Length: 251
Image (tube, rainbow, N blue to C red; front, side, top):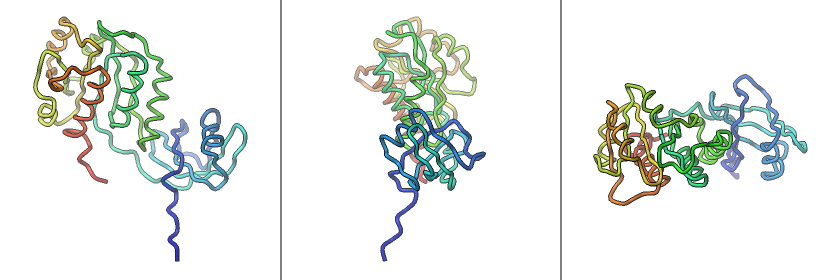
């Protein structure tokens, strides 16, 4: 006898929704998400869709209605509770749009708890479309099966970020002038942490001195090569996850 196929299938579409799912039996999807389900994924009644609400976890739902601009889903069961997210902040300087889009996407996939964009003197950009940036993190979370979204903070100046930095959070910063090897610095630390990554051209001398003046600051080196801003941000995050984050945990 053939084995019964697993339900919901791993290929089922995944969506983040605004509605809190543990308070609903049925949910209606409209707008671009409805278009994605009906026109791109071509769901039909009884098909499975995985839903997340950034609060209660991951739910299996069944399609019960497909209209031109609306898809109706009925919740079936809670599949996973919200995942524990490492208490790690990535604080990247703004870059050109396409490069910063990459940082947002990969930081989400790598599992950061928060993304806190900042403006420094050598930034080529000083603004960020927050709604668009949020959409990028949501799409990345859907793709990598996160059950929770990273916090996406408004853009702030470096000085403001330092002034509001919590006293119990380690403050690593990628210093082109040299510092402790990043892997050993991360491995030595337990507890909340964040890393500052500068723009193309790095932090200027006055900014480096301002950062070093913070009581929590620790300069780190990301190796012997000169890295682009997006490479430094993504590489540092991956290294932190592998040494102090959740890459060593098993389900």
